[in-house]
Length: 396
Image (tube, rainbow, N blue to C red; front, side):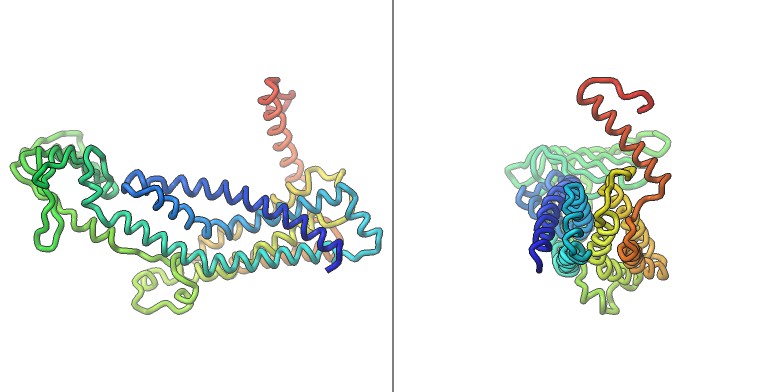
């Protein structure tokens, strides 16, 4: 590899790592926030939460890598062009491959990395995540008997115990059950206990009342001396680890057993998941080619309506949105699997055509003008917020 090629590769790789780190941190944070209920609802330790949070990373990495790469390549080439480095490289008699080759090497590395994560690390992380969630919900009784704390047993079912009695019983039991549509049941009991009857876990409540609110708003109150609440269905469901196609290994998806109940019900989801894993790794290469087609030339970008980085990201977002749409619809429509493969290949083919023709890939004039106008208004508003001035006339 030539010195210039190593220089371009080193610069692009540094920007790629920085973009990947920050983008991954933002996406990962948004995903982690949705897992906080694992601690608050099930009483698990912070270590369990952090382990579940770490297991999310392999899921978001294949999505983030192509965008980090396209930002890195477009930013590197735009900066080099602005500093006249690309002009100097061309004037020295170097071929276009001098610029293209290091970018393709970086894209190939990103493709391999994405493929390994998607087909090896992600399924293992998902399986471990399922096991952790099932384990966190399995010891249901130990969670419920914590004093003075509301515990979510199921969607619409909450239990609270006021105190634990010296004889092993429970005092001050409260149960709120709104699982049945338009019907709310509230149980109060002075004391009770957990017992096992015929292999079932039962919450037996003594000396209490049941408040039942009907759909019409009418409330009825029923007193009872003893009432048994069956909890066996929740403990059984909590212990069961349900594996979906996304949680299975690639080898399992290629040859699923005939007795797999999920495969019997939704065979297209297995094929759609395979198609996703076999195409998602193509996007880093397709996005790198898009960046080369937009910003890889050594001509002036001063006449461009918007910055090449914005153009590159906008085009990449369009193709990735098409990919996400095809992925989701392929789970129910078989023929859309061809589009799952065709979209990244089409993006790469179109970019190669522009590169071979030595023409810069640009947005349509109307789209570029609209995007430039939107960015201008956003910039004016940010400036106004920063300095406390009114936005420019017409920026509203």
